[in-house]
Structure formats: C-alpha cells, structure tokens
Length: 203
Image (tube, rainbow, N blue to C red; front, top):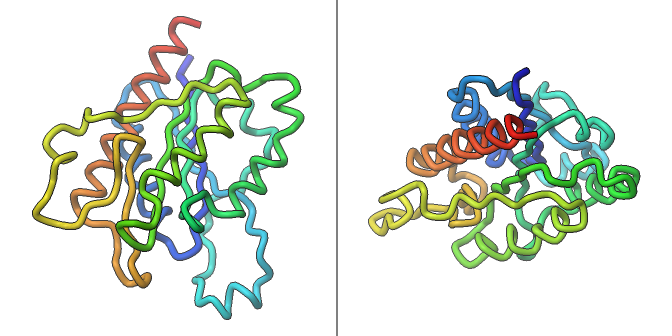
C-alpha cells in the first residue's frame, strides 16, 4: 500500500502555494507515495481580504482537522507573522485537540516550509517556533538539513529557506519564488516523501 503524504498549507498571496506545488512535484517523483495538496480554512472575512489585496483562493481542497489522521506524513507550509506562523494555520492546529488526545499523529514525520517578507523576517524563527506544534502531537520533525547541497550555500543571490525547510522571500509581495528556491522546495518534497515511505514500510 502506498504511503500517504499530505502537503497542508496556508497562503494569502500565493507565495507559499507556489512552494507547495513544487514540493508536491518533488514528492510525486518518489515511487510508492501518494501525495495530496490541501489548504487550511481562511479565518478572515472576504471584505478584509479585499482590503489587504489578497487574490481569490485556488481550487485546492480545504482540509478538516480529522482528515490529518489519514496521512502517513506531512509537510506544513505557512507565511510568517512577526516571526511565527500565520494565525490561520495556528487556528487550524488549535482545532486538532481530538487528534492530540488520542495521539493519532504520533510517530508520523512532518516537515515545514514558509515565506517571509524580508531576510530578517523569520526564515528560522518561523519553523523553530512551529516545532512545538509537532512535539505536542508526537510527530517526528524532519528538517532538510544541508541535504540540498551547494544550494544551501548560495551567496550570489537572495535565497530563502534554511536547514529547517524550504522558504522564499515575498518582499512587498511582488517577488515570486526564485528558481533556486523552487529547486529547494522540490528537493524537500522528494526528501520527506522518501522518509515517509521508509517509515511506512517499517510500520
């Protein structure tokens, strides 16, 4: 039976979603892994989103907390808000109390990816503070470390991401994920899919 990997994200302006799509491609390159893309519910009213200049949501299905139990592994993505995950994703995790009580996610691998507005905006603090969510569920945090190779040491261009996971810089919103950031996202998807498959095989 194929291992199930869920890529679950929140994206307001599309930067995180673009990374998620590339992560999905990387994960799908691993044979024996079934990959599904999900977005978490929006918590802001439409009129507020309009004032913030947020584009309409894509047609990626919205996940319910209980559906997390179906997966063997996860890659969670979100933009930063003051160095931590966006409230929309935190609200989703706050609704997973029933899964926490029964520890249905315990022992399952989980990776993180993210978007920040600037170089000092939370490329490391955002995933670092998110790890607490995984810990309470008993999930196994899977960083990418330096497995991306030379790309981790890129100094000639602006590049998001860190050993914690793939990342991008949104700037004022006009900057989109670069080629090297998308390559890192692809790598993360492939890397965590492989680990999810291995753990599923030993279960």
